[in-house]
Length: 428
Ligand SMILES: [Zn+2]
Image (cartoon, rainbow, N blue to C red; front, side, top):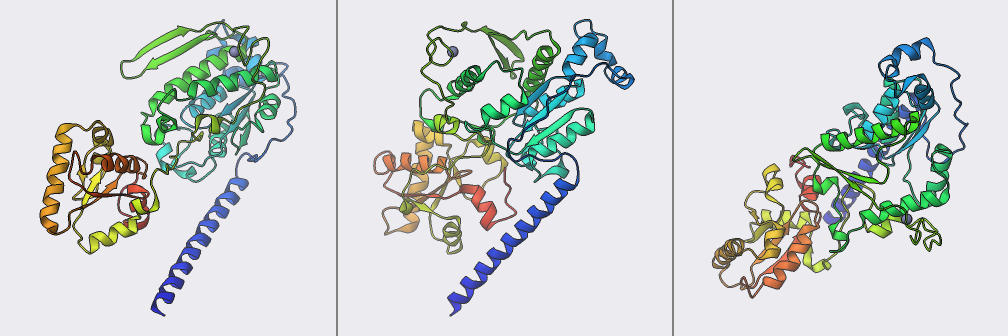
């Protein structure tokens, strides 16, 4: 009876949370609709972008500082006004790109992003703001662009670019900039190839949420992108053709590498291409086009415990060792008390000082537990991916490099701990 009551209460609580979340979302969607540009959820036909016959007095005043450049001039400005650009992704690169294109007077901007604005985006995705958290990024970017230059036509798309919609979307948004389906295929393919991890499998693919990024760095690259687009759109042509530009932000160094010209035997853009369809980018890279973490599944159910299980182990003061395998820089941000920090990389390299430390703690634990010969070790990390790799590494060491232990990982890591056990614990 008691159990049933508790269970029902818990279920009711969960439903109430769901209702509250839905109400929130509804309010957001209604607010989005009431203000600013309309959000597109699919590919819809567009009216052709009309060329301006001449610059208005207001145009002349607004763009005067760039009109004075002989490389641009009135004709270049008119060229910008009849150009349509599709910005794929309204994040760290897309924000400065869209911002400078709009400021310079581009005619039409398609802004594509399937994601919503989060607090952790704001240090680099500078078109969004505190007040647009939870809003579709495409819409948030479009509103910001409109505030900057209301004469730019903005088309926000809440979509993910996929093999199913890419050709249609890009061709209708930019009918003149792409010389045909085949070239688009080639570019899509090429970007897929460059992103693919060469070795080490798909676990090697990193993203901003676990790799870290200083906000100004994508900002600089986005500005370079804007510069090249403006040169192409105004009629000067790009100076980056057949070049790969690399920027080392640490040393503030720019390098340019000349790329091979198009090859007649290329499988994608050659004379007899064998690749004739867009690939599924996510399947190809084994990674989602997102800055969120993917979940690994390396361990079986009996090798893992939930954060709730771990909480009750602490509550019952059961002797154990908590091993935090995150890098030191993350442990400095936050950690659970009593945890021992040995980064996954050190564990995998079997660094002797770290193995000694680990063995010391296991011995202490054994003394404390007396009879039991396999002390429990629980491994934690940020999201519950590295902790699984660490369990596998520790299992190999158990009984050889260190005394025999029973190792389990804590599902969902510190992120789950913050969500389900301790809401005051920081999330990053
Ligand atoms: Zn090629």
